Length: 186
Image 1 (cartoon, one colour):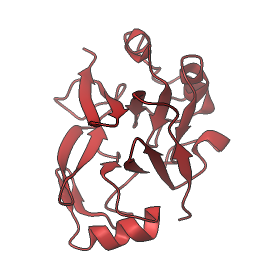
Image 2 (spheres, helix red, strand yellow):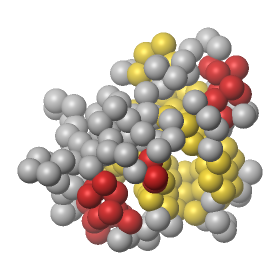
Image 3 (cartoon, rainbow, N blue to C red):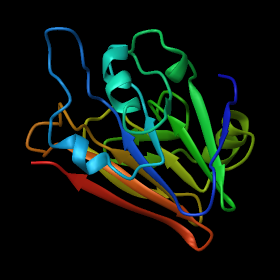
Image 4 (tube, rainbow, N blue to C red):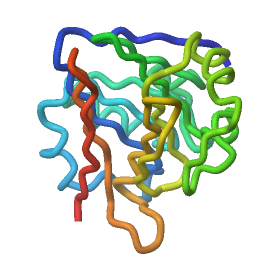
């Protein structure tokens, strides 16, 4: 896994984070209720299993799209990497599809960080990240990651786990902190 870095532009960057949508021709589509909730995003980050490039194209009509590749993704330059680090306002945000497969967690549902997560983070991202964004469970989740950080999973806006509502994540990256909210669609 090679390191890839995306520098966030400007103070107060608004991110929308999606994963596990599995959009394919003739299959499920991004829900219409999602699009108005994405307005105002400066960047849309996908954490894998988005499906065909069609979904990424739809999202890119709202804001630039960048992300990591899951197991169910078409080959696309926007999501060609396994690891992505976002940096801005003094914060580092690491993105992976499956935190357990990457060695950052011993469990992802619920998330439990690996005992050597700091070392693995350094290897994958070039440093220990403040926030870890991960997917692959279809369930929104927030857990501790490191001494002061969080591991956040946006869930799925299209195919949530049984008994869960469709969700995605909004983050605002500011000098004073990174503020997140799970947005429920239905």
